[in-house]
Length: 241
Image 1 (spheres, rainbow, N blue to C red):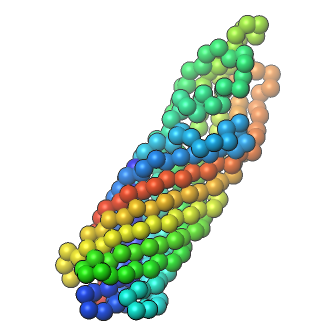
Image 2 (image 1 turned 180 degrees about the horizontal axis):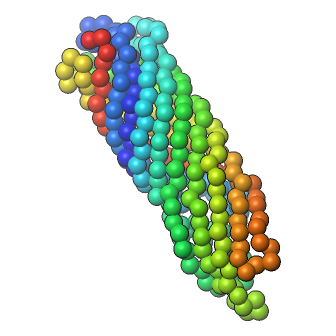
């Protein structure tokens, strides 16, 4: 999953701690995104969500210098889009129906998330390299893919139905914890490499319509959890240097 971050971080030059703000633009990939849906009958982490891409922007301001460590505050806006393994998702949804003989999907989609987070970071310079740790929390809005699929029921039912599930965007809690390394390329620019852990939890109402079924519309509450590890690389720009 590509990860693009725009961050503003406090760092140091080779002689003293810097009080300048920084921005970082980066791109990356997702490693082992996982999801957990409750109470849909699946209570274990699974691989419905597959690698995709993301973009984000963040800004940080240094507020305290202690010895070789600088502490600051950080805010981030992120966009994440992951391909969705519809086959495994359908298998989970339909595995509890003993009358189902076959099914076929008619639509796939992506798991999309927006996050607005704030938190703190700490940086430490060793030689020319700046190391940064950050922890952020806030709001995350997830959009699950709408799913349409057919179920064919075995005797004595003898009919097929088209099931359409619709999920609206919902907000919940978001968490991001990461580590980044910056290596100077010039007076104001640095190469940035990092790894971030992201987790979110959002509540949904799952609206399901079953054609050719007397039950018609059904709705059920759903809590969706997402966790990912994002590896990133990019450039950092320092203001005021």
